[in-house]
Image 1 (spheres, rainbow, N blue to C red):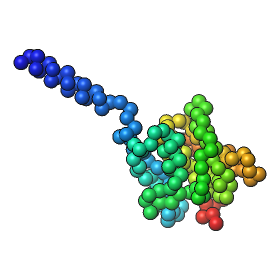
Image 2: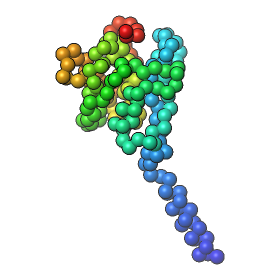
Image 3: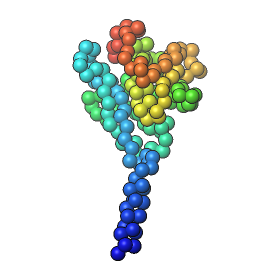
Image 4: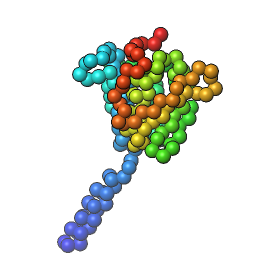
Length: 167
């Protein structure tokens, strides 16, 4: 009887430890987008989270490329122009450096900051980095100025004017 109890306890411990790994198949993340009907001064803000299952993806870059496809929730919209892609994805210390396609230059400066803030909130949660540095593709004449966003800089200051839909 004692052997049976010991065997049961060992099996129980092994089964419990089996669920302690860093298994991406059970993972979920918050993807941050702009509210479709946003207005400043509201209590809940311009940016909202959409929960997503990330178990089907192999790494953070694949998840972030999927993020650029836009939200599934109809109350949210992607702040990125159609066709925006990640061209380069490099970790440098505790900062993730992302080069985006030149589609970003179509946005006003304020909307670039808003888009990068949404993306940074998503990337920081997924990867655990301290900050994300964005820049646009260098192969075009019109380039986006580099933008660095950390977890502490989520509050947007209106340095660039009013955020409005880009045509």
